[in-house]
Length: 438
Image 1: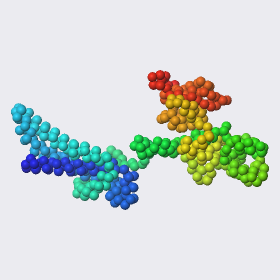
Image 2 (image 1 turned 90 degrees about the vertical axis):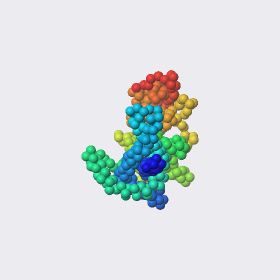
Image 3 (image 1 turned 30 degrees about the vertical axis):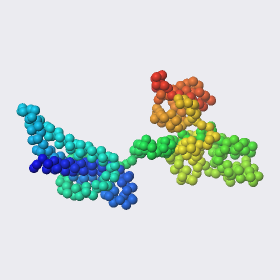
Image 4 (image 1 turned 60 degrees about the vertical axis):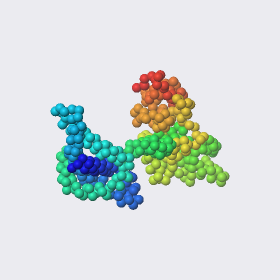
């Protein structure tokens, strides 16, 4: 054959190899979620791609048969077509015993470079750009190619399956989506501008409901406002005026003797009807949902949904009340400042770019978001910033006690009856950063 004919055949082989490389990467990289959406929209080709992904052994066997056959044939034709011309070129400058070897090396390099560039590198990079679109476009000719190669592909697959069973290799593809997968997609969406920063924050908080326990969002025991059965009317009125809550616990003598709760609206109705409000009885006291402090916020949401309640008492393993939690508390955990009442005292106050005043009862997750800290040491041992300080110091903190961690200095500012009220958190400058406290 003439040089022109050889060149035409080589370029046909390169085109064929490029097509197989393109389809191989596109079909392997096409995401099932997008393909299912297209299939549900009525695109039959998308369903064909999904079916092929479920049973891809025949395709990959046929693809490898085609690629290797084309590569071998291209090498044979290329070496025979270009070597004489390279030999003539080399002998113009060198006529020694290595002239034949040099001409072979040049011919081999040229053909290999053409195949790498046009049959491997460029098609695969194109396939990675839009795998779903390309896989749908090529699925019909690919199925024809698989049918043609099926006898040989069946034989090769049988040998491969035998070897996999021999070495106990699991060939089933795991398509389960984990939280890390979703988190990576959310991060990519935020970087691409598809998700706004606040939206990204909301989604992260929703997934954290599975990890955060009730104490991280509840109203703690010392802050719970409750009525007793023998509460004076003036005291009830004062609490209603001072604390604008919608629900109040009703206890016998102390907070650990919970009877139920009353709705502020019911008391308001009694006031409007000129009835005494200190006569708390079965007509006004409602049964209260009681939950353990070991539940996650996600589990509490399930309890609220199943019981149709929005208010619950939290008790510990000793049957002591440790706090109360409402549906609003969980929504505040997810939405943050968007649903937090403006008049409510903020737990985290940013003084400047490098310092914050933080309430000791602030949940660790909220503090991590504010300071952009990835993780805290041994987080399973505490729920709040005060708990972190006590865990790190191994004692009851006093004013001016400090802990250094993650490039921040945590300093106790105010302590009230062993309770850490407030801390000053300062970002340490890199050129003046002391070693962290173990």
